[in-house]
Image (cartoon, rainbow, N blue to C red; front, side, top):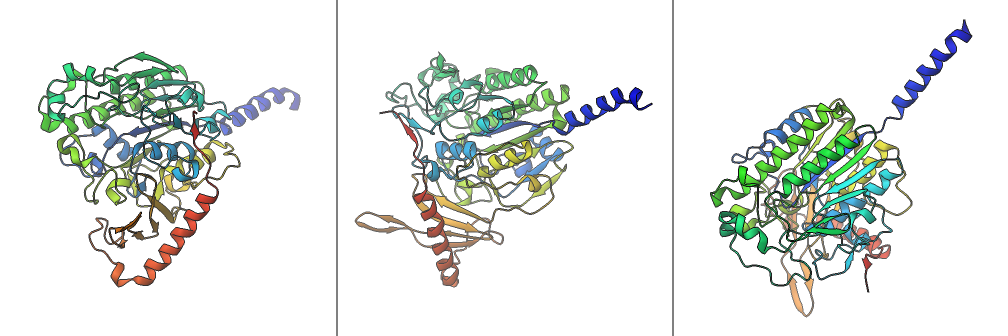
Length: 458
């Protein structure tokens, strides 16, 4: 009897072993300069985002989710590595086309983390972590890359001769003006289109993501989809363009939403939805000075380029049917740095011995526990130490200026009671100011001592 049952028992054992070792897929959608208020599920009354709202209805909305920088390159470096930008030498503002530095290839990215477990990996979109061949995604753990190497308002090769076109005019005549921006489109390490037709780029990124998912449906995969939009100049395909410039930003976000719908439809059609984590978030807050070409961070204060909440608290939706509790919202304090160790834990991958700054928030995403994160340092867009969040409290200090008085004032906010940072409590709580200042200095000193260099081409 046992001999006859042996093959069946062996097959069952193999089946359960395979099931136990099934690795989840990941889709990370990272928009550019999208504000906290720029989704229906985050309170927008003017922008319709039914597909992302549906993700929130089927998943988890993260309302206290942050990026560790208010500008592009440092923020993206933190997402990829789980580190403060200063720890990896990527904190001093963004990378321009005439600069030859970027994220050091010795750093481990999320893609390299997952390659250990046999994942297929792809990046479709804006990279902005270095544009020389040694620094592009295919040298940083991604099997495929299709996208622009830096912001869509930057010009190849040295950022010279950029057009001075008013944003409203650019939107009205986008069929004529897109060619004025000399931004390259790269496949692998080669420029394949110069200038890139920005009218269709959001859709083409999604086309590539959909095909990659279809091609790799039978193996674990990572799709990193960092959209170029809604960074100015704004463009959409002609068939979805609202000709009124007042609606330009709304039109771009609604187009991104439709393209997100194509991704989720593909996952559902292929039966991959229940084994996939999809994370939708932004690299920093909205570029407010561009008015109808920029978004909204309400009820938060300020936007891109600042250390106020509007610059670094971003919308985030996490979707994973059967894994993420549906229709839930979490105010747990989390950051993009936490995604690296979280994905490592979910995939049983080894993050290596290099010091990182993220926390495993997998239990937070699954609705099982509070966040392990209690603190976050604030640095300016140029990498200067500015403040500390600790629990409910947030301290921002005036910046020291060479041969000049400090700029600004000491500010202390209780974010639980005052999310808009409207009431400065520093005069009332000098002891809290001193305690946070001491801790801020201590944390930054450790990062400074152990900072690793960025890569630079001599």
